[in-house]
Length: 141
Image 1 (cartoon, one colour):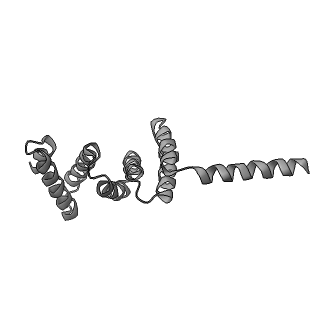
Image 2 (tube, rainbow, N blue to C red; image 1 turned 90 degrees about the vertical axis):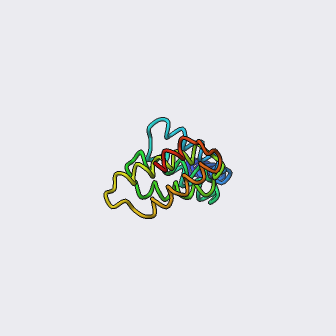
Image 3 (tube, rainbow, N blue to C red; image 1 turned 120 degrees about the vertical axis):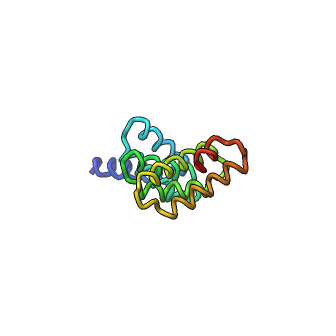
């Protein structure tokens, strides 16, 4: 009987702890897993962060990078597109996304129009911030 109570107490504590975790906590946990090369766990943690906060651009960004590492190009592009919208002022994010889209665009012989449009918008954004932007000029070329 005591063992059941102990198990019940442990389960209740775990539930209470998981309810108090914030979206940022899950992102931090996912970042640790990502750094350790455990992409499955990182994927799970980033998705939990997104469940807690649909506007967590960092979670979408890292989920996209995780998908990229796992070779899931379509899912990566979707997550990164959301991150682009949520983190418009983060140049590192915008650069990473533009480079990945360029890589996918050039690798696909059909040259998808959506990616072309995204790349044109990215080039315009980089150019608006700095007319001599390396990334903007690189994309336009």
